[in-house]
Length: 449
Image (tube, rainbow, N blue to C red):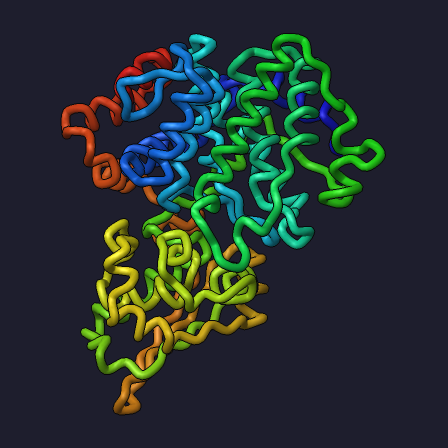
């Protein structure tokens, strides 16, 4: 039976000394990837709204706001910096049969708490490892999507565990923090259904903020519901059903996390990669395309194919990056799927608006079975106006756990996403993350200010 005591004992037990070299490498890659994505999000309106709110509601001087010449409280920094890493939808993902959370949603809060505590780079790796392990185990064993809850319902618990590790809370205080976070902050799935709006890209930042606040309360002695999971009307009874987790102090779940190659919803990655490869190989003229048919797995058809709302009415970025019809149309025309494809002018252009309406998305039950066994399958058939057809099928994509990006590829992605920083500064960030064991966290956040 999963309990707050089990999670808190796990948090206490984790030590970087038990991490393999491969696990250390993966945790560093997750960190570098998240920092680059965060820097790329600076200047986008919803992120600026968070920044302005943070200045009003969470003033402070202890924690760095990435990309700003300002600081905030740990709570404010957790929300601001998590909003950066999440907003563009370029973050990492954990692939479980019934849930697909984004473990990088934990990093902003863990870094903020570590800065507050004066942590070392090795301690940062511990906190991130804790959060990724808890997030992965909850996603795999206690999916909540079908019960009407958003995946950030997991994030508030995993982030609380990571923050508790950074603040060096004892087992009882960590139990209290998990109890407060998991009782008070359960997000509804409506965030990602129907007509999607900008809260979709900010919800995890709210979870990170709440997790950090719960830990600060527990640090001051606030007691929380320690029977969060098993108690009457508790998490298992109301939200998830019964479940158990198998938490590994070596934090091996990070190896099951994917890196996005394209700025697109997680389940679109194979299809986007496939249609770009096909368009380039066959030099397809989008003006002569009659129809595009995608066979995909159940989760993709549900979330971004139309099962949870109209995915053909696309006018905003929040709608576009959760619409398979839009992403496939834009990727075929532009042969790319980056931030430029989500500019308002691009989204509303006649060519992509016409083509997206030719896209048909259909679930293939065998693809659903393959997804649940670890693949991310997609089959695309493009039919031209003269009857010619082109077909491509993918099992996964570059960045999937079966085809992981190596350090050089993650570093290249960082340099591309963090282009608001000059090359010298980017190189210093890369070198600092690569050598986290020999640095203090202040050395890293000093480069992000």
